[in-house]
Length: 624
Image (cartoon, one colour):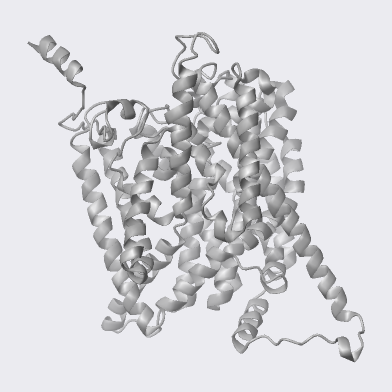
């Protein structure tokens, strides 16, 4: 949730979930064995089920839209963007958030059930994250793997403790806006004013260690292009390109360029990857159908292909995977039932989101869920947010005439994102279960339980942030929730069209939209060897709106891992994810006590601020 509300960059935490699941349950079962209460060993199948449940639960903090579409409905975001009339604003409340998530989060699981045999057995899709998680869990349950897992958990614990205590230490110096280590002008005050500084965030150092090096370089390049070059130049055009003296958050001024150019790059990248994955999906399916037809056409003896037989392990995996069936009638009946309940219920939360909008989404969603699950199996890239943006534009424009288009578009985004996101997540987990010989039915039930937990836990965690930090969602604050502004601005763009853009913004948006497509095309043309050196447009777009401070943190994390790999690659590969997870989790957990202190109106005792020498003289003169 903290990652969601700060920059929106959320790395995969599957490894952390698998590692901690192994550690906690292994410790518990050892205790029970010593007491004589337990005779059954802790297996990799149980480890897989635990990991599935935890990831399903935490995944709701992303697909639930607390940093994007759901919070984008709020008055705080509306006041910074526009369309802040009653029809287009809905402030967060625990009750309706939990209710909304319960009626939209489960239908994606049911849409994935009929696809599991096609994806895993027939098409043999790799699902890289699911496969990597399965191999990790399998390794834990070997003698050597168990020893390494203990060392990894010990490393994670050390850095978790360090990160938590570092967050606690920093808190003492943050009694006011712009106070503390997070406002340290590392590269000087001029660079600080353009958001270039190291803010001592262990979270984003850890994120930088998990993310590929090219992602970290891409966000740094994006921040240099935007905050280092473009915004100072466009800022100098105040009074010419846009009125001078506008409020800092007005989309008619510099803020509009930041938001809409960022959106243009995100849409260009999303459109390219959508078309690429869709074309690969169509080609893959047609190839499978062609191969099956060839298999039944008689051929002459000389043309017989060399027959390949599956290994004994694959035979056993397939046998177990197909034995423990989830009935198709259950999935289809459940889909229709939940769709009916949702169609009736969701308009109660959002009156402008009329029932037939939802019905159209539920008719189209299974096709998009299949495309997303298939594409994720090929590329490990979930396009859930892209499908959500598609829903924003289509439903928002459709509902524009009723006056509640912004809210309807954002609600449609939520319905669509939850369906396609959970469908691809469950397919990943089915692949993990296939490789660890875990029962598909137990995987499905675990995903359902985890989703139900997430529908309660995530809104409660978000509510703590919402109540503890009054400036949540405001640009430049500790928790700016950048994607909330981006998603709401997209909904406005779908309704108003290009009239919402300030002068010359459309030309710049078009240029960056095309640039994102060209960069992606070049990455695919040059091949894997050179593609690793070409930046990722989606990552470049993130700092355009948010700022550059987190990019410095991520690059520090990336540099630490790079040097570590040069010194001892085996150790870096084994312990790097554990160190990163510890840094992220420790700083994230510190947010809970800091939120409680904020709710209790306990303020830190010290404000540490940095001033220029001229400002310092003025302050001294004033005090004297």
